[in-house]
Image 1 (tube, rainbow, N blue to C red):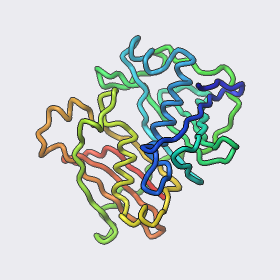
Image 2 (cartoon, one colour):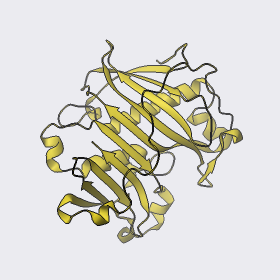
Image 3 (cartoon, rainbow, N blue to C red):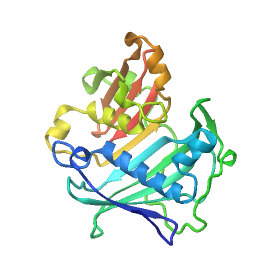
Length: 265
């Protein structure tokens, strides 16, 4: 069970299980994305604007447009993870929500900032919050644990300018299990794809992601998936390693449309 706190935040504690962690028994980034979004929906439900209410009343859902998360350490299977989340005070067309991850005894694991829009699942268009009954806590006292940088994640010509030996490429065919109830590839799946295109020795040497910043630019809808021949469904993933050891990643469709941009440290 979760708890709405007096400072406007909401907290839930979850015990991590085997599928939450990787081969090194460390919480996967994709599992971070899944757990924090479930907790965010729990707080929204407390105020009558959770996923079920929005879908039933308006055919609208929350869609993540950007997530920036910094991890300091990682829990493992069997550990309890306390997730605390709260929205920014300003409700705009693109609205902001924050997250903190901590252990039972107060050890800090990581924190994040995210940006969201409301999306009509039938029309596939963005909806303004004023068109739905979106409510937030009246008092929000928590401060932002992380800020969202403005601008592009990396230079537009980065992949064209990078030498061939610093770029990794892979193709991914979206499949049934990649799609969620919003009828598009789930945002946590993209985080998995980004992690999968990192060099093999990244996780083999027990390295861990300290920062992920991912921009969602174009959805892959289930309808698109159903109406395209298999030869046109492939998503090309490219990963360029910078001189400073940062990994810049993008995913693009056959026609060049970018689905995500991502930076991993």
